[in-house]
Amino acid sequence: MITELALNNFHKISRQVRTAIWLYKMLLDIKQQGQFDYQFIIDSLSYNTKNDKAFAASGTMTNKFMRCDRLTTPRIKKDEIKNIILGGGQHLLSPERRFDAIICNSPELF
Image (cartoon, rainbow, N blue to C red; front, side):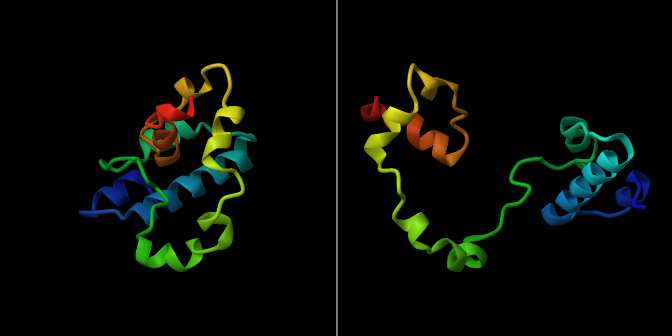
């Protein structure tokens, strides 16, 4: 089993390896305890790196998978978003994410 001490000997840990370690730890905790604490796992196994974009991949790798009709021509049109998010729901979004940011930065929708 990979330990914190063993990983401290590495100068750099890749995002993908870190994510695989998180996934392994989550599955191990589910098997042993029936649940897991994702915040604790991510915070305690960050290896001195930022925790964002754990599953990020470059566009050169993903572009061929992202060019499907469902993504290039969404079923829900922009003017329908206001009918989905009612009663100020747009204020509950986290604008650091792309979709949330698009909605928060499109006041004409509301």
